[in-house]
Length: 300
Image (tube, rainbow, N blue to C red):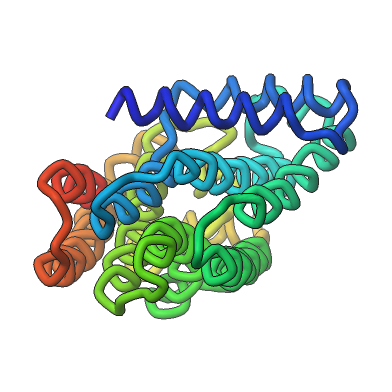
């Protein structure tokens, strides 16, 4: 997988450096933003590559450019998300006006890159990118409105926001290889995004800082569970969210309630339900062992 990360990274460097319509200032910022994300790897690009490789006899070199294009779109969404949430210390948050232009450039470059490849089914891939990107944007809008305050509406929101992007990455690879997509890949691709989002939600509550969803009065599955309980701690959090009285939160008590009171266990249970659904769908797809192992790791 490290070699695949390397190839995607090289393709990103090539796309940035050789885009004739961007000035050097934009290229320099784009490159620096890309470098900040390199350490975490290119999971979305890898999903695309693995689902292309699974259905072809010979791998075309252009698939690395498509994987890089998907990573450009993902990074643009990450930048816009961070600018909206104002809870990140990435460098793009320090220059929001300039960073927004970089994000817009990456969005256009993602589609343009796929269009410039020699794949027979590239139009299908572009349509998938547009469809699922719009679904994710709609999910992000719902997240910003902060109105998803029960399990069903919250799961629907993260299905659109996060599930759409992982499903898109898998389906584009499959579409480029076959000219069609399968329901099974769409389903487990979606579930992987849901699983990853729930894991992020749980992680958010483990540090009492600017990214903590509870302090920011955001809703997630553990918080929804906590708010539904009828005890002194949950009542204090309800008051904090409602702003109806001055509330001083006892972080130690709240952290203890989240872990021992069932909120984290509840979120993990919902995550595992989606994991089992994803594994069931994955059994129906003839993907190689390397790809299957990588997918299963994302479901943990």
